[in-house]
Length: 116
Image 1 (cartoon, rainbow, N blue to C red):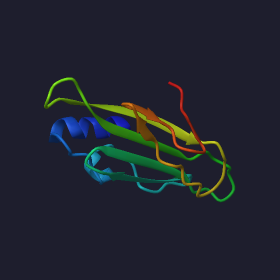
Image 2 (cartoon, rainbow, N blue to C red):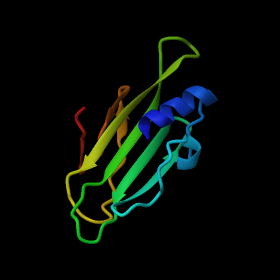
Image 3 (cartoon, rainbow, N blue to C red):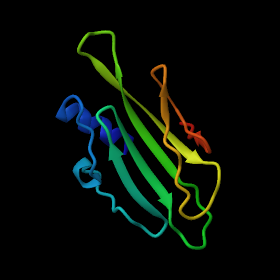
Image 4 (cartoon, rainbow, N blue to C red):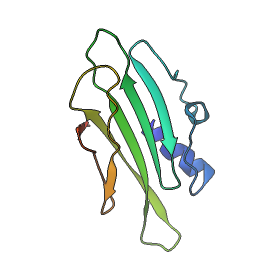
């Protein structure tokens, strides 16, 4: 979803992150057996959630973020992203949102960055 948000932003122009999973065109359902998926966007960031919804499995929940960061040019900007997972396992554990510190995305409390 992070990459889809970056592509959506590049196609639509500045400040155009999507608030709709359908509009991203990635073909995923908003609810599956194991996860509920949702997204939210502001002018400068987009957040994507995969929150565990399974009754019996202890699964990790995830949050992805894409931030708009000003570049060296007056009208230039770039996007940076991060994917974080919750430290705790279980149903309906909502991960805290990542933040941007000095142009670098950082996972929020109770989450750790997913390694590449």
